[in-house]
Image 1 (spheres, rainbow, N blue to C red):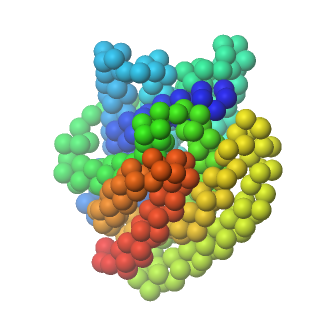
Image 2: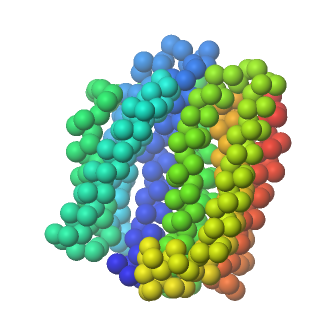
Length: 366
């Protein structure tokens, strides 16, 4: 696409990721947690959570598409395609949550591999036959995930509504939605603010390219976090053992972060030029700074799993909300003066702030 078109694509992806919070409705995390070990208040609803999740996604996706078609959205076609893709991805995530909660990690890994492979194949076919345009990427992604759902290892069944009418379900889902909203805001607002404050799509493209490596490392750590979450959930009432396990997990992630930061800082030019090409040379200076944030990001991920495993999602929502506000404020101050570098510094400061709150919260009462 080139830096400018890639910047537009990243902007659309960020807007769709914000709407994805409504499409998911907090059900992905709720399904995982309750399948691993049901909370007393949720036991009688366990067999209906999946159909409620799919019903919420269907309603929200149709509503979002309708709004984009009626209102004068910039890049409307691309945003519609992104909404449709994320709707199907939400259903794929619900299936993953069921498999993870049941401890079927190998089966879930195969499911993830199929979804991602068919999604990538759909994107490549779209780029080859149609062209390098953001809406083509999302459209191909949508078709790939749609095909994968025909081989879903969990029966999707008929969508149903009514989950949000039950107080216990509504409270848990709203808590998880607040967490997702705050997390997406402080992870993604830098892209939106870079576009808004600089008006330079190429600058957004350079920053987005460097940020892809940060996201890639977090993605590679996700399988461990998934397995560890279930382990923590099963022992969440045994406080001492729970904290010992959490400490070991956090130290592993901290050690991994230092290794990645060291390698990334030393080979940043080679990494960027090999993966994105010489057009993205301006991303080289940004990459080491974004990787520094992994010193907080990876251990924070473990602490987050611990807090959610102990039913403290309200505390985490509060902490993440504070981090999001801090991140927005720092971006407004730093981006006009330093551009993408300022956004990277804001990311480091925000993750450090969040880490302090998570350390305090994980030791609180469940």
